[in-house]
Length: 243
Image (tube, rainbow, N blue to C red; front, side, top):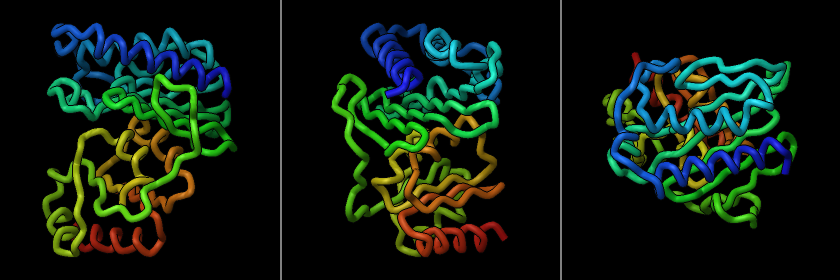
């Protein structure tokens, strides 16, 4: 593994310990509106501080919380706490998202971690996608579920017409509330769907984890599935529902 990947793992481990073993109610306190547009919590800012400590030597950091931090030819894009509302509610679906881009904006590495379960997804440039537990060193190639029965539709509650059309077409789905994590789990489900304007913090690392899948990225939606035909079906439903 590269030095960047190892540094990300160490940062994730420290964030995990701070949010779980050293949890305190003050972490839920709301602070200020972050660069991504959402209100940052003390937990968001603590996680950001940890990532900056571990990753600032690799380049300038663009964080959902504080925006641009530091300088450098390469760019590290982070969502220090993906699914903040889930964390604040005790719902075990929250994590982190990190991507490293070279000076030309090309992806060098990406990492998405579910801090609640310890599931870790690692992608390094031309190497295969690896997955394992955050506190394990026995990483293995990602293997998706052979016959998934449902999809992930993030923020489905904001698009009731699309949700109804998917149900009418016979597609089951969940909306767990953490976009980067849901992208990372796309290998295990029928489809991933996000409708609306996506932010770089939410999707750049997650899309890297989707290598080998059919990916459709448009201005108003993102679709990931196991086949081009399936993605086309979902896209048709979206366009009809948005008319």
